Structure formats: C-alpha cells, structure tokens
Image (cartoon, rainbow, N blue to C red; front, side, top):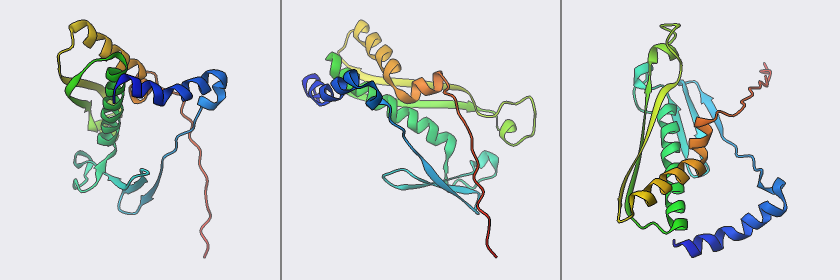
Length: 172
C-alpha cells in the first residue's frame, strides 16, 4: 500500500475522530474459558487459541504460552505500525522482520522466591530492515512506530486495570 492509498483509507476516520472525538473511543474485548486442563481457550476472532502452562512452570509445551502471546501481540502490532508508517512517510521496505524477546524469572510466578518479580522484567523489540532509506529516515520510522504502536505504548505506559468477579452458583 502506498502513502496515497493509506491516506485515502484513513482520511474519513481521521475527520470523524476530529469532529466527534467520542467516536474514537472503542472498547476491544478478549474472552476465554479456563478449562480443567490448566489451560484457557481464547477466542481471537480468527481462531481459537488454547493457552496453558509454559514448560518452565510444569506445562508440556502443547499449549500456547500467554507470555509468548504477549510478545507475539507486540511483534504483530509493531510490524503493522512499521509498515503503515513506512508507507505514510515514503520509506521503501524491501523486507522487514520484527522480533521481540523478554526475560522472566519463573521463580516469581511459581511462588518460589518472594523477591523474584512476576512477569517480564525486560522486553526487547528489534527490527531487521532491508531498505535504501537514510539513517535519518530510519530514525524517524522507528520513532513513529514506537509512538503509534498500541501494544508498545500500552506496555510502556501501563493503563489502569480493574478486576471484577461474578460467581455463578452451581445447581445440584
């Protein structure tokens, strides 16, 4: 997609959001069912993904790991954003590989050591780009990709999260 096509596709939305800012607020949803096999079936909108325990926590590796899924979401969002920004600013990318890796101390999630944090301690996002762009263009491309990538920004600036519970009584 070239810059003109991208602008044409997004122009009506941008105008709508400028004139009616409330229409830009959309709630995305995810839903899953926790199963007896210590797994959770997540409806992705495209397929059903079953997440379970990582082998480092006792899983057998047959399920997707939610930590991997988080990194995959970051890679997917960064890759889409990278391509959109490249198109918008006229940077030709012959090839673009996006990768993410994160460091976890599984002692935290297993409750083995109270001082060990639960969750990723570090996440590294990398871009391997084949392009004829200048260093200045590449710096702008990466800066704008970071700025507009929803998952990246969510991880960098943690949102308020609330937890609720609804108990459904079992019937005899």
